[in-house]
Length: 233
Length: 121
Image (cartoon, rainbow over all chains, first blue to last red; front, side, top):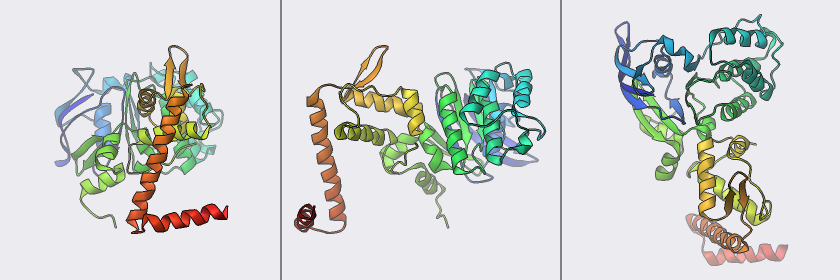
């Protein structure tokens, strides 16, 4: 995916300004930055759910990303959109009716890997298990680009670890790319190829995780703190 | 099991060292087969691309051999394992010396402590 000079305004307020970057095929990119820095908005733009105010977002060398690309781009929102009365199996059936690239078998395999039952109503699952089920439905798709908004937020450490493992196991990065936003930078860093840091709607920096460690001898959290240029109190 | 990585060095290097350690300790034996890249990634909780780099590095060190269609195996060449053991010994000693110096201890006084520990055993 290529993004060029992307800007987005909402009610005359600038949310994102002049972002240019590319997401290489076969990589997992972490999107980090403070609350309100524009991460969610950027993911929605990349998913084609919002339209840029200016600039362009292209997939596969030239296709402009729009809502029609929901069949190639899988997007995991940060909110819980499932009906409490539905079971995992019912959610999977719904996904199958909506997305051509959805495989019920794969979704069930993910659910079984994450050890979450698919015949129980979502309302009766713990928050951790609802997060697991949400990921199972999402990973059931065979998309070209996976976008995840805060997939680990509010989950316990065990749920976070199992979600990370499911991402490693079920996303075949040879054929697709992943962008995920997160605040759990320490925990997520080992699965990332690159990190991009947003600050007040600007792309502050983008770098290869192992290069940051190699050249600067510091991890991504320190890199982020230095670039933000402020002491964390 | 997910590994906690040191913050100041690349993750792939830490994984290479951990495998070297397993070979030196005999936890991995000459001729043993390593997990596939994806299995290893899953076990250690790291990116598949990172593991590919680890395997490439091990191959360059000649600690492993990849047999087409069969997988990656620990070398059966005792010479290579001996060399890596010597290198790791040197590296551990250098790290120890750096740490001693950072506290301002002299090598001689530390050697005395080490001797007393050895006697204690």
